[in-house]
Image (tube, rainbow, N blue to C red):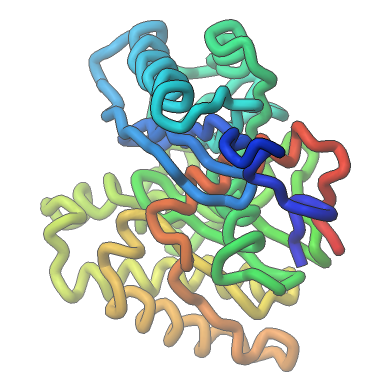
Length: 315
């Protein structure tokens, strides 16, 4: 069971007024989200900034930084506090602790030095991880996987990513990019992926992929599109459940949550068909409980986890 804070989780100082806040940042393929999150995981403020496809790398960071500075002012003026830490969840690939990031859907930020830029801008310690790994922390802390030692959290949105917890420990892998389920092959000889492969889950089930396949934005899906997308996700999830002995996968992201029950029923049906081993039977795929707050709560969890070295991913 994930427990980010051993001992008391403190949100209020002795005077009963000062909130201990993390400045949380989610770097997605289509938008940046910046918010303020308490040590109890309560999101108390947020702002979204669309990703400008025509902007340069520095102009994109300037857009993000304006939102960061605005939230720091909000922390002071509206919440009587100054953030203690910056936590980042970023689309990947990334290097450890987001020293650099290379989101596949933000071509301007190839090897972009995000950590140093944020550290200079805020004067705060910066800790970062992949966005889906951050989501796994959030869902294991407060969401659908609370009390579960072995699970995966997924984002199905502009991109597709995953974060895996085994025996209560968040998996990192050699470079910190463990869990990239978006690049599991689900359709042999399928569409070319931005990673260079073919038939990757991200190339078949992400928002941009759906629009390319159907000619319709993912906000206007047909029933058949929702069923197919669920089937593609079910194929990828089944491979992971069979490989790692998982019983629970919780899914967030605008595509998955927007498609709703039709998507999840299709994904579960595929999972039931493909998980026939005794240990993987009855694996479940469910909506992430924290919904659209999950990415920022997860980013804050990355920050608190990095700041507080008494943090453990296992109880």
